[in-house]
Amino acid sequence: MLESYYRPMVAGSAMESDMTTSRIQLLNPPSLYDPSPNAYSQLAIVPAGSRLAFISGQGGDEPDGSFSPDFRTQAAAAFRNLGLALAAVGAGPAQVAKILVMIVDHDMEKLHIMQEEQRRLFGTHHPAATLTPVPCLALPEMQIEVEAVAVLPDGN
Image 1 (cartoon, rainbow, N blue to C red):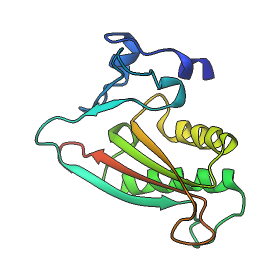
Image 2: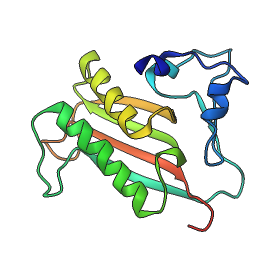
Image 3: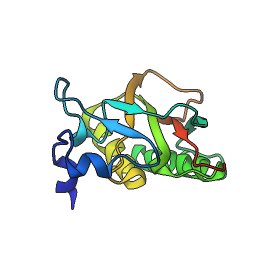
């Protein structure tokens, strides 16, 4: 199952057309590094006139506002919260064009955990993405924050 995440995207391939959803065209030009194994795309093209939703950074907090001390639990909660925010505007993961992920004290273990949780929400949809290691976030307990730009479906 995970092998499907590690297939290279080739321009014009079936995988590329599968990843062009909800009017968003995701591209990995051959002149740039192919980031598909890392669950993101180099470019996201949104059609002119699209309505966009800018989703504030979603932290790894639980519904009661508490934070687990465990990074994996926070990463799962951050992507869950992003999914809930998308649903609130009538969108889903396939409508996300770009994400920004901020991780406190980033390391390779946290990167792999974040990618697992990102794939849990997005599946094979790989939006354009930036990961920024940070020394801290808004609250001392926060270890991860994910913000997004989504293209709203027609009628929303």
